[in-house]
Length: 282
Picture (cartoon, rainbow, N blue to C red):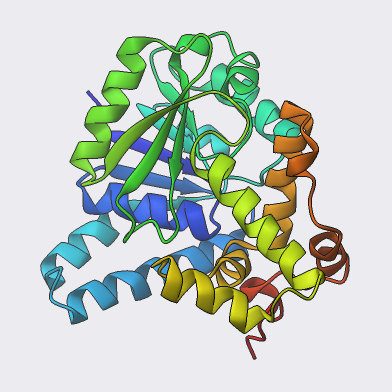
């Protein structure tokens, strides 16, 4: 039975994942080597929960109970007795494999190890452990507290039992788990990133302005936000990283990142998080 959950990486995704597990009644340990990141995480989660209370989607007592179930820790060794772990660190294969090897060493043999990766092979991560049957992908959508989808990825060796446990876990979180096979980009980014990339090509080639491209997709295709706004929200560096995974893994030139996208990343124009992307966020 899953009671204690470890979440590794106190960035935007890790914070949201820790929050939804704590809201659902789990004891959560959010781990990050950066004390500054942990401090920001605590403040961000408190602010997020305050909005739920303000909108009467959460009582003040439930907010306090949720915060009481959260621990912010700097040492990964504190996850030794976790029943379930979600990794949400940088989208880098080698960094994730190193972390999974560490988790395999320090956690109980029956603990399930999951990754919030948006594109990296779960089979590759599982191969870094001695328990590939208990390694799977649990890809949450941003913002985690609001988005109902969790993309569940079965690696080559992932057991049916581990997947079923995670499907039930999603239900407990109030999320819908949808299974995807372990191919580059899975379902979400296999479809989303080529659309964003094509929007950037259309901008580079002068087919339309930023505003025009977004307006067509919002007003004509009923998307809640345009692809360039969404790219800014995701982070242009993250978009390039995922496109590179698609291109390397599938070998199809249609996945090559647009030169304009690479140029903007080289200039540090990463979207919302840097204050400048396709739009300005002063």
